[in-house]
Length: 508
Ligand code: ADP
Image 1 (cartoon, rainbow, N blue to C red):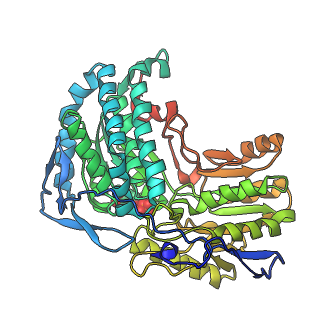
Image 2: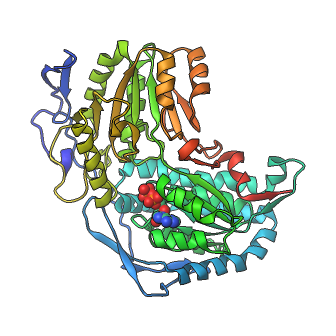
Image 3: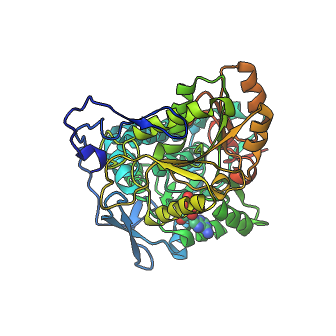
């Protein structure tokens, strides 16, 4: 089981290896030195052999009787059979959402808030179970699902519950009404958290919803459906239809849907934008990214390295705003590379249910193949690949060692395309002007990171970076009160905060 399974005779011994050829600095191999005992999360989670759709407050079998498997990417075991949604299922779910709309939207806002507080509390109460389920279905390390995904999902319901009866303060002097039935389509990188990002503002504003989780990670959304039933959310307020692209497309095309909220690839986002053009439907799209991190020579380098590591290897790089391009000022490039290498080698790759694991499994065989293709292209185009070495990876499952490329040119494919894996492209720059120009030289604009000791530089650079979020001396910080969204091909519209409410309201 990855590094966790091995045993070293002296756990405190750190092996000092030869000098790293490129930099002349010592390269340390922490991989074999830090052998902890395996610490798997022991919570037992029941998973049904088969799941239907959640429509009108009940689980119902799919109209066409078809199912598809959802697989644990760390073991390749099938966890459950999931209903494959057809146009008939989508139709039924939209009808249920439409039927629930008048009563839900006219409910006193504080009553709507009470339901949302209950959802938030129940997520907290069932947090361990949800975390294990998330990790088993998606492959992300348990410490991330336990400490980030599930608590933040609860936070989103708490935060938006607070807004429900205060919309007149959010938009003073305006009359705020719900939009209607919302179709919400989410990806596999943060399954429960993305469901919360979508559902919480929709419900707070008095809308009803049909949610379609990603085909590789439907289990926590279905567990959320159980929670909604448990807290007596009125039937039809939230409906969950499972399936893949065709199910999503049927939801987008449905005439009863008034608003589409989508998070996923730019490719699918473009299709959605094209398919609803002229329909009068509202849309928010949160799409891909190729986010830059810029390290200036005056930055605290150790702190910056932590942020870089977090920014690209967190959740196996399955993060739309992953800091996948690193620009380092030339004078500190060698030092940064040594530090990056050392830190990379200390990352533990393996069983996602082990609390010591830093990097879990790649979400699916398809995604792993895509990442591997990019690694080949990177090498073929002349960049140098540096991988974390360490102990053998588990025999089954989908694994990719965290890695970075040096010798990268801006025109290289790995510097331009979103890879959605633990792959960092390192480049250098001389002047702040050059850093800004190169960081902005991308069709995307979701996020960016700036690392410097100088406050004035932070403001100047952040102002000129074309990205929805610019983090300064930190990375990947999220808060339900803070709007998130992209520039250019990273999408449009904002989610979270007051800005996020706007998309779910008609203002007059
Ligand atoms: P990723 O690359 O992150 O997997 P996708 O854009 O492929 O992102 O998928 C994100 C979500 O969009 C998933 O729930 C997927 O099933 C859904 N989806 C895929 N194709 C379509 C489509 N043509 N119309 C609507 N939804 C789609």
